[in-house]
Length: 251
Image (cartoon, rainbow, N blue to C red; front, side, top):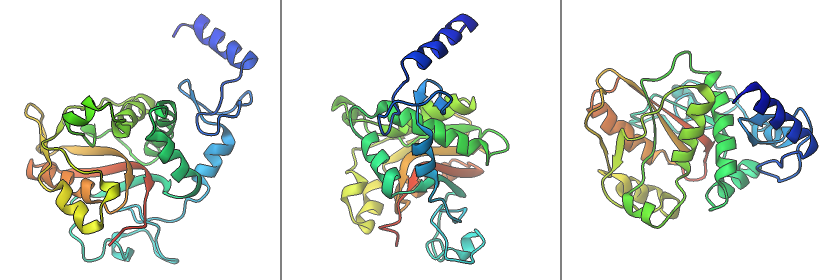
């Protein structure tokens, strides 16, 4: 964008303030503007206010006094998790739950882009160097025919634009149609995604660090299945980034 158009856009925002992508209230001059998609300071504060010490491996809030290691996490203890770390803006509840539900609506793209920018800011504070590949959890082609909203792909676009890193959007493929994880019990979720994904040919995975983007992690079944196939392709490290960490169905 040229200096002229940037100045014009700024002047227009002063005269006609954009609405917050979450609460829809007109924003005040000087409030956060995430690459043209907006979140007001109040909503950002509400989304991030509930942050508490969390397990570095699965991002689940830790018991009081724990230090952040997976050995202190009741959820990780005794499990064979194939991913190395999880980053989340916050816990799935309150205003963040409301935001995730809005993201899944046909009209939720602006909010998804805004939250992707917020997640990108979160990632930039924790990652010292870009991963070799950044990819979204893929959906089956039949869901695209139904015009279902794929929040993960929109988040991938927004996160990578915010932090200036390239994505690998076609690295993963969904091999068969799966049921929506949110409708299933924990043991059903494991079976639902087993064997559902594959690594596309033409990508150098051996020794690579891969960052997987999704909207919500609850049981971690999807992330674990994808991390498993990436490990089989000799990926050195797999990390996950989500908008929200659900905690209601862990086990």
